[in-house]
Length: 76
Length: 147
Image 1 (tube, each protein chain N blue to C red):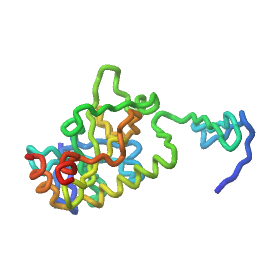
Image 2 (spheres, rainbow over the protein chains, first blue to last red):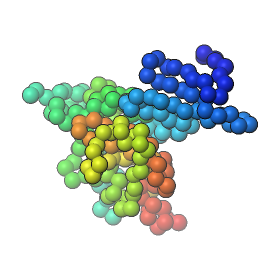
Image 3 (tube, each protein chain N blue to C red):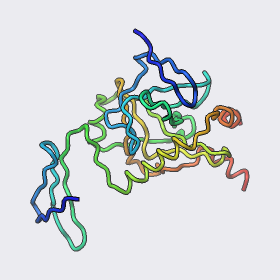
């Protein structure tokens, strides 16, 4: 992992298009500003991880013959 | 135009019309994948499969959220909205991913990260609306009955 020390107001470039700026440091909290092309989604890591895990679970949990339980339930 | 053939590990040979293929510029969160198609196994089913065109073993069941959650709301940040690119007043297609289970009462649906399809492109987005859990019960009434 690359580790860079920055002060408030300083920035980091990821390639030519993505700018990460340390906006403000208050106690143990850092406010970070991110400018990225609109095609690049930006997530908080914990939310990304939660959704990644849920996607994986959905892809592997689904039985091959999922139509039967679905059909039975939707007619209730 | 000729169809695309996918040798699905779930469904066998799928013949997909090229216009049904949805491009996902950023893939599905954590799963990647660039091209998917919505595949239905039964004509009247409330459920479809978001099937990868490139990975024959990757498929996720999806449904129309409003069939189950009539007051479901999708609220997107400016960044997500511009990623989709739909003009104001145009409602793109919305799908939510279903996590199947053995018992129907254990089925879950991800209301937090729906899939938006517009103009041949798909995006899994973060829904900022309150009350949009990652693991909502799909059939909460069954749990109430059992209790």
